[in-house]
Length: 414
Ligand SMILES: [Zn+2]
Image (tube, rainbow, N blue to C red; front, side):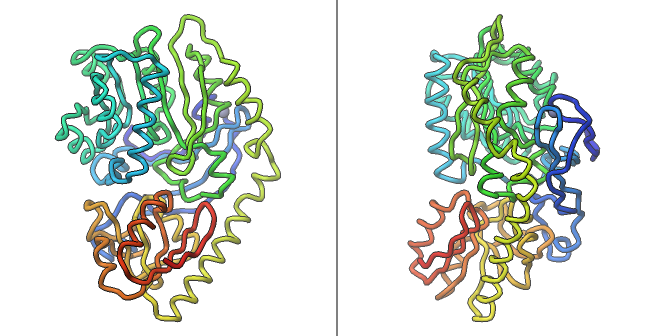
């Protein structure tokens, strides 16, 4: 799939009855950092609208940008950057090894393996690992570290290649990558076919109930085509032949849901999963009233952020964004802020330094730049790493006021 297209069907149940949850208008690809100011403010815009399937309640975007445009060249997200994420995947790989009873020498395949951070942990446990990822830069980094990574989408060609090299996997895993995949159904079908008999499919994706509850709307962007919760996925994957063994929630990436599935002769749904689904059906994910008023609450919060920033601007304190994650573009657009309000952005990822955030014309510098100032006001754009970042900022010995936009709007004096 190499072209942009409007999605008219539910990605899971194929129903054509899709209702708009919210239309964000046209925004640029958040991960597409630009080399110049002019390129930044004239960048191409694409529709961003979330729709809800009236049949199975699955949430998704109604427009998909060509994956080649999103990932092939300019994709700079590296999963190894945040230390809390590394802790999370250490716990995750312990959990998977235990639940799937993995012996040393088992084959583990990861879909969307990025820089190999997760597979590195499985390798340390003695597993044979292989990753597949369409993004060039992270794949190169993984291969350099000795984590075999095929720079490709997870398709039949890649599968044949892996089968030849290492055989069929005992576990297929995926960390926050499935929401990025346009051809979701075929990914699930291929994972099912490729797994060994009784093999496990374990994955984590962002949990949309948390996005709705905490109003962290900026995790919605073109790269995330789907916004998952348990019920539509359980239905689809169980029909495909997977036993749904366990579902749990965790705080990774602002709130994730973890699925443990097994390729079994008889596809069952465990009692634990049935209980989870029962509670989910009673939640805000199914409340028309909550869903209808969701964006109104968000707008109120962002009017507040906008007011705080404009007050600080009058006091002539430099205003700096911390982090240039994909979500920053939508967050700043919603708060109506650009280069006239934010002096610059700092980021810990070297690949982003010297570039400009799309649309807003704000340049990205190394974190060291902060040391040149006596006092700064920081808006935490990479708010999902707030604990790590605040720790780092405290060590700088300068006066810092930090605005944390999510999950609760807070202003802290460090
Ligand atoms: Zn559906």
